[in-house]
Length: 113
Length: 115
Image 1 (cartoon, rainbow over the protein chains, first blue to last red):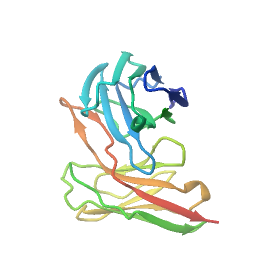
Image 2: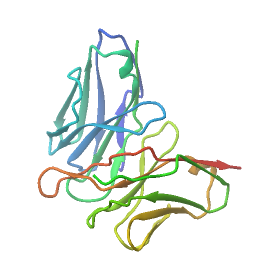
Image 3: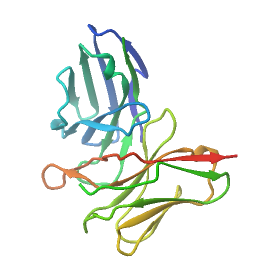
Image 4: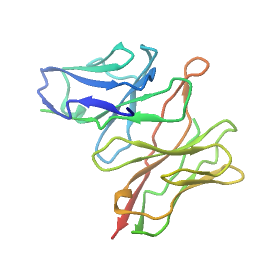
């Protein structure tokens, strides 16, 4: 199994809503990442978890709250988002400290209305 | 982190070879060169990586200049399914020894394949 599974695939939420994005992998990877991708732009790193601990936060606003409940799961909790937060949110995983590859999910297309 | 420079877009005809260039003049001796691609409406996928020697795998070949200041991703026979944005990335390592390899993406090259 070389898949990173993200749910939901599409999400529309209001600015006052609270929602969560989920990411799951069963490859034994101990590093997991969240990226944000706006249209026609490259993915931008948001957060990195290594061995279930947050190791990188790229100055992301607090309305985005990551969580790593266990080594296979990564969540991104969303609250009070703005329309400019509409984007494709990508989850990825990799072998922490080893291996050149990161495996990406298909992403969640988020629209904030 | 050392930066990479790629053309914004390239075009190819189906079943012809494609050479996608990448300049990385400030590469350090321990930087690996990685390539990822992102097909429309999908997440990026790993293509190939190398350090000094040329590399081949089932997807592509990677040719690295002797001075390592540039590299070329070679698709031997382009298909319509190869139409994607191709990213050339130098290895970024964060954290304690061992660290986590974290792809940091530049703008990439959008490859258009004509039937």
